[in-house]
Image (cartoon, rainbow, N blue to C red; front, side):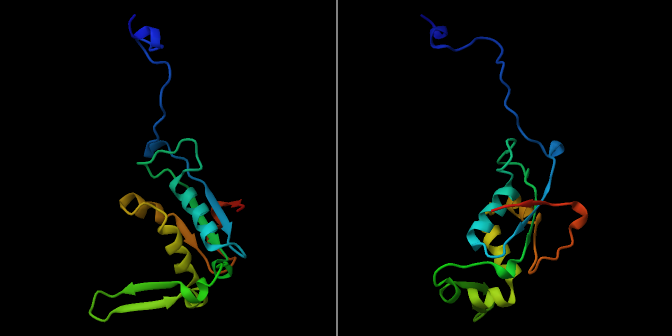
Length: 156
């Protein structure tokens, strides 16, 4: 018996795999309200939409994700002792240039940066991830500039 006994078809394959290209991407706008939500839950949802994994046409090597607006970043929730224990580090590149901030300080003074770091840390760390990160917009309160795009409200 040959290969045909195992169900392998000879000739043309009837099923075609769909591969997304940058020419046929349709991008939507989503708004996520972070008030009272956990930081990680909001970040994972936003990263998933930015990558495009919520779409059936997801292709790993193409930036097929949508735009994400996160509002009320200053009202996000951190569980456990993270407000006091979690640290954010920056280094200027000079000797002695290490700067350290607690999550409480970041939440009070720089909630947008805190949310951006959480989301961008979940994206690929290459050119593709940087392109995806440019589609993220974070605001401290409920006012945002993207009303003209008519964003769709996303529940968490």
